[in-house]
Image (cartoon, rainbow, N blue to C red; front, side, top):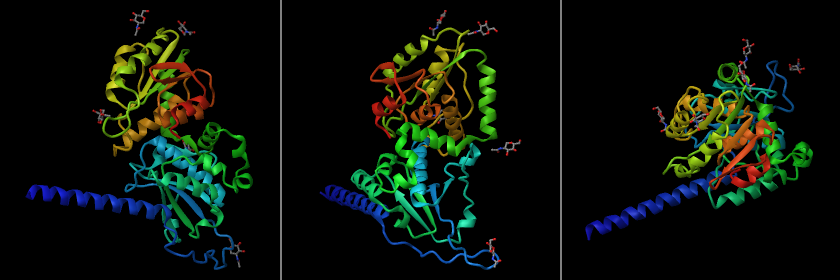
Length: 361
Ligand SMILES: *[C@@H]1O[C@H](CO)[C@@H](O)[C@H](O)[C@H]1NC(C)=O
Ligand SMILES: *[C@@H]1O[C@H](CO)[C@@H](O)[C@H](O)[C@H]1NC(C)=O
Ligand SMILES: *[C@@H]1O[C@H](CO)[C@@H](O)[C@H](O)[C@H]1NC(C)=O
Ligand SMILES: *[C@@H]1O[C@H](CO)[C@@H](O)[C@H](O)[C@H]1NC(C)=O
Ligand SMILES: *[C@@H]1O[C@H](CO)[C@@H](O)[C@H](O)[C@H]1NC(C)=O
């Protein structure tokens, strides 16, 4: 009797907690009021700045659920496009699990944020995470928003993990503010934005060129990205029982004079299996293998960045279901030598069909 009452009380508490979490998300996704109004800003000589720079900053800090590198790249693309629509300067503030600048440097556009310079301004955090029922509403909001007037604050710290490109395309402002977007497919837009924003920093560059020049001489570089997923934590992407299909595909390249092999994966066991099967051809980089959104290790982040950079340089590239792999294909920017693994088959595919197949953007 007593214990059943306890169970009821416990269930009641859980229900209340779930409700609170739900309300919190609804509130943070649509909260309309601003926490401050922008104040006039002055030059050091005292004269008024007439059109002060305003900022839209892709944010991923310790208390955020930033998820994996693929999710973060989606967030970066969304935020960059919204910065164009809203006429704001774009920045990236990523400190989880360590600063993005440890691995990547700005290419054509400087996205580095000097946070202390922004601290005196009127700022706001804006959250747009995928909470099931909210998702359609968020897309609708992106489609219809007048981003030039939506936020009054000087600095918006934008927190998301989703791709909103199709909704951004449908926004009325896009034809004027981002005309090129209407001529690019999703894959082309991602590839273009990734190259515009990022280049490997000196460290990453050194790691990748040393690795490739050491291991790949005159051979063709064959790569597979085998995203496994972690049971109970993530969706299962590639069942272990189907790995043999991928190994069979790689066996076609079993000629050490002609081919070198790189297998990127999120599971130690899969990496070990590949190394054992293809020990004469395979090479590897340093860093810990794990899921970015589970791990708090900078070494995991390093490996993901280095592996994605390698994937963009492969002559043959075979991909499983993964945003990180897909974005590597977008940046690699050719359908030549591109293969998809799907439902126990490996077949030649294209950047666009890869995207349609997995439907994870
Ligand atoms: C103050 O500095 C700004 C920017 O350097 C300049 O544009 C402005 O003309 C200066 N005003 C006066 C009064 O010197
Ligand atoms: C890389 O190193 C060179 C000189 O060693 C330096 O000039 C350059 O700024 C560095 N680039 C980056 C992105 O750190
Ligand atoms: C690759 O071919 C060699 C002989 O050409 C054979 O000994 C080896 O077992 C093959 N390896 C795999 C992984 O098929
Ligand atoms: C690469 O070079 C090695 C020795 O220099 C040679 O044996 C091999 O056939 C070459 N491979 C290709 C694909 O040209
Ligand atoms: C892989 O092994 C490393 C080193 O033992 C460990 O830190 C990491 O958590 C392992 N990764 C996974 C996904 O289990």
